[in-house]
Length: 101
Image (cartoon, rainbow, N blue to C red; front, side, top):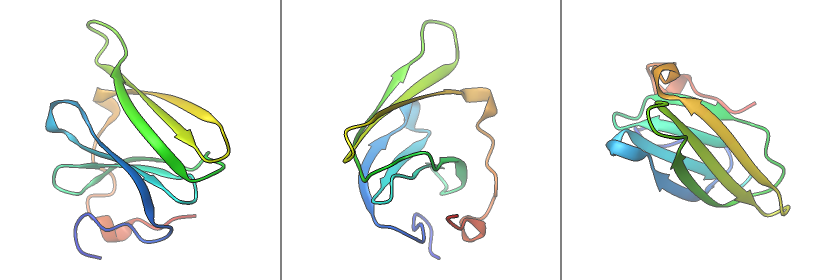
């Protein structure tokens, strides 16, 4: 697929990562993907129950180099994921290697 296109359920929410590092994408099936500015997959989460309706990114605290990703979905659930920035290495390097479960 072309850059910034994820196969599978349609996207329902989008928010920017801090410092222009990329975007967090919420999907209709509850999945979340984070893509870098060059469209490399940084991480993905498949623990959602309903369509992601809203997302926000918060710093974890001063000097922690981590973020908290908070998402609300259509099932009424809230998810909070803590991600350390040094763990965000592009994997896989090509987006067409990405396929939903």
